[in-house]
Image (cartoon, rainbow, N blue to C red):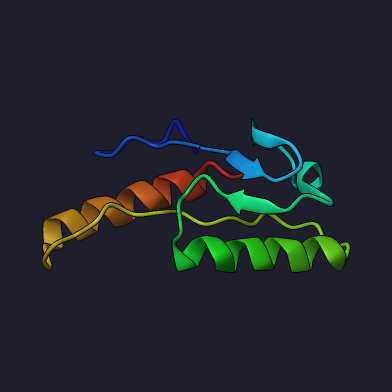
Length: 98
């Protein structure tokens, strides 16, 4: 996904801070087992909480599917060109999924 062409840089930030381990890069959800997260890589956005809960539910249900979420560039006003560029880049990212 990180190789998708487009206007915006793509970052895969997995840094998390937990009470038990401090700050580290979590590459698998299992690394967060029995941890109390106090800060995630994406800040305090609602989408991060929703993604965490969805991943946690999936893990507890022993279901394995590709899941995640993408933060899009901030838009101040409606701009058709920016919107189309954003959608095209996201499509390019999704096309690279296995």
